[in-house]
Image (cartoon, rainbow, N blue to C red; front, side):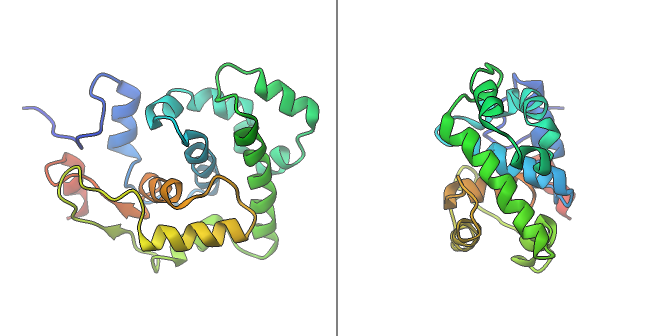
Length: 188
């Protein structure tokens, strides 16, 4: 029996299949993972998610396990080191965005909010379960527009609406699995 998955899942990449089966569309409440995914989705801009996913372990090492306090304190030497690291996307704006995002995240925390509280409040604590025709998922929604604008207002970078919608899917704020996907049955 063949396991049916979403049309976008690359069957030839075990890492991608594990991501699809175990993370994508699954509600995430872990602060470190929420911060990591926000930055990885931003790093993906203009690239494929598979490219970023294949570099995820290197990103974790390069960015100190996504420790926001450490990242917020990165100096010019650390930025230069990151820009020389072939295991990440060596884009000056994306590296700078991760540092800016760490500072914005810490400011959010100073206001008494966690990413978990902040993000899940947009959906009243429950994931939005969509029923799009296969391959007809939108690139953005009204909700991703609102979250994008609010994140940007709070100082986060690389948080356009399309990036935010992909983030929402990745952390399970929305569940967009194809109708025939075996993961869809988890929702019942």
